[in-house]
Image (cartoon, rainbow, N blue to C red; front, side, top):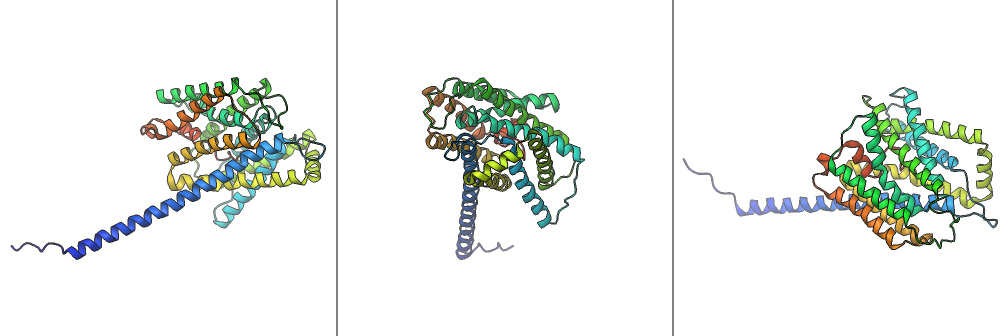
Length: 360
């Protein structure tokens, strides 16, 4: 039987050229998508962090008045996110009816409001670099709540990471440099500030674990969950403002200080926009890439805050920061991490333990 003739060199070269061209286009597409994702996350969340510190620590007006109404910030953030989520559901023609019982959304809202309130209040007592680095320790309460509520089991590397991050955070908090910031209120690293950060970490870890347990078994679109949870948060935070008598006081403050009003509008806008970039990044590149970007974002936020608001760092704090970020990067690039990391720990390593957060 006659053998088939070998492929001609022209067809071989054409195939090779086509493959090379396709590979080049794919790389260029990924490059642009990656640039879009990184730029979006860095711009929105770094801006969000700087605005937090500006609103809570920098005085407004000639009389140097401080904004004191952190629950008002929670209300503004949640009402913006709720409106955008509702618009997204209507535009995509997906159900806007609650998928789970409403009380479940409200339960998550309560712990989420407590989380965000502690976060804003802590900025009155600790600097933004201290707060941001302390947030890296959130896998510890998530592991505790995961064990208690979900009966999850963790592995040696998870405990090692938790220990190293705790060590780095402790060094950073316990060995501060003399704060020469003109916006310091002279009460850095107080017991009250540390307690608020512990409250933030505890409530944040509980929220993500509780959310995971409550919504298990429901075929729920992400915007549906965000819409109803933030809507409940709007009602609860508005109720809190009215009961405390802070609603009119906060409204009067932003009326008298227009720059504060624009800061709050921008804060709510970037907080909501960041959710789009977070979802886009995870969907396009996966949780591992997202974790790297978020760790880098925290590092950049600390550096910018130190420069912008004049927060000096002691050499012990530099060591603490290296321990924390070195551990997080090592965990991210460790090849076996995806198999050994449980879902809750993976979420907190990403720096976004629940969908409402850095909801922001």
